[in-house]
Image 1 (cartoon, rainbow, N blue to C red):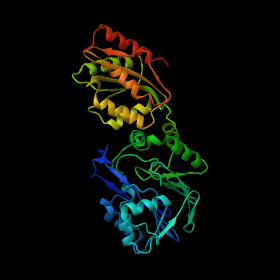
Image 2 (cartoon, rainbow, N blue to C red):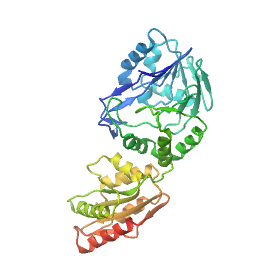
Image 3 (cartoon, one colour):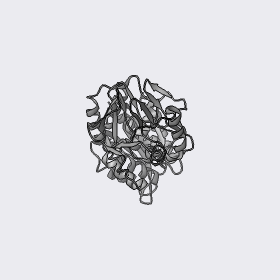
Image 4 (cartoon, rainbow, N blue to C red):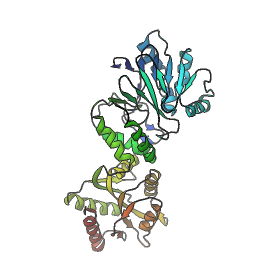
Length: 385
């Protein structure tokens, strides 16, 4: 597929996958993007998952016919992108790998070969001239592995952005909502590394970028400021949308009734509300919404003198991703010794810049007049700007 005068798409769509990275639900599959820049020298940008090696090689041969690529640029060594690297080097015996020093160390680990006689090591500011196209390399450590580089085409002003600006979903699935799956992807996979993404954005500000070619998801060619601004908000842990996420677990339905009551009151007050059942809904979507909105309500039961396992998993997921700059409210339920609120609050002690509401709701087995009044009071507090 021709994308620009000298640039072709040779990636693949994966509809066989059910869990990306063995963790994230991907009902619309994934794309593994790979590109070819055709000039006096020919560069292939990134590989694909090993399960699609032959399809990828066929795409390259169909595009280039009998011509052998001069370079294979490996921006990121995660197996969904580097998995077909060794197959490529067998097929194209005159090709050379271009990558970072750390990536070649990882190649040795993955493939037992660091391609010492067929490699070019690049770092920050390194350039590779193909002819009319000069490629400039930008290091992006921990976005989201330490070896990552990005590639800027000085001629066409294209940023090959590695995993940044990617999203879940195959390219042959119709999807007009980039934000949702890109946000879930970002906070699931890159969210811990906000500082490193901020450092990268500062470097990219010096480049004139007219298109972004990521390793997952669609190519971005219009309104790039919108996408870059979202990455700035996400990586600075800013509030994207004013609203409330309510994440809960409920054993016999009584905590769920409390959550439904709170959600109804908040909606009546004009608040935007997202409600997530942590035992049934996609945990990654719950994490996504917790970072999207400025306020978070956690509702769970005391369980084995602790909290319900799905709630513990959820809070740990937030902590692992540097959850901060938010307001948190707590709802606990217990029949004889409710301690869930205390436990949840303690779990956030290592987090920075979190504010807890003055109102904490305690339910003794089931809602009563007292706990209903607590919920109304909490709703009033959450709706204060």
